[in-house]
Image 1: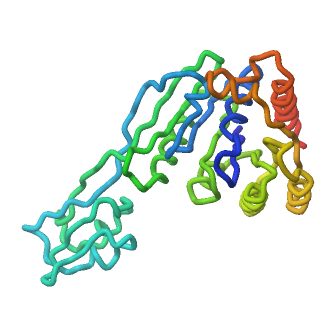
Image 2: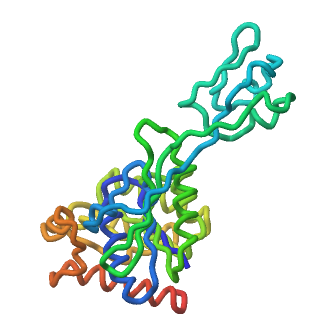
Image 3: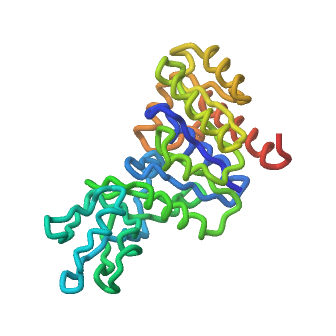
Length: 289
């Protein structure tokens, strides 16, 4: 089974929700937490663990054999990213930062061997055993790289190879293609938001995505005492979603964030919110809702 924690706007606290749910749900399931926010992964920081078992993720790049190239320009014509440019005589050159690794140039090239395989490392994946009874799988994009989708795919693939009963996915912010790929296959989408004007606006975007993908969606309102929760409820209801938890602004949560120790392990009122949400998830996964 797979569930996803996401949120249209960055900084709403989705990673805080994800790691606390992971700690609590690991008491009931053999669990894997996948941090698919590959441009800024921070679940390991909030859990206070060091990333381990690094594996590189490579992306295809064309390498031209100019002794075989007939300068037909087909590789440049088919490149949607405009990563291949040609000189006046048709000689192709690659701009590596624009290349998406789609292999279209290799496919259309009429001369076998004129385009050879080359690769570059775009990031790394990690598999880390946590002291909380579950495994953390992390994707981390290499600095300067712009293509995060291949890394999201490989990180999720590495997570799925592990032995688990429940895969909990923590996505990037926004509603782009990497987010939709991350939440694909989920039985439940938990959208974390805040009741601010921008938070409310982006809540609607993630709810639209959930509806488009046919996902059961719940909404968690973080810093709920700092804005208009009623408006969040109104929007959620219009999309057939439900506000299932409200987390007030809390210095205890801030301290747990800084210390790298999940608040669900502490004997504080805020921990009860995450425990009750975890219990609700267990009920949903057990019998549906």
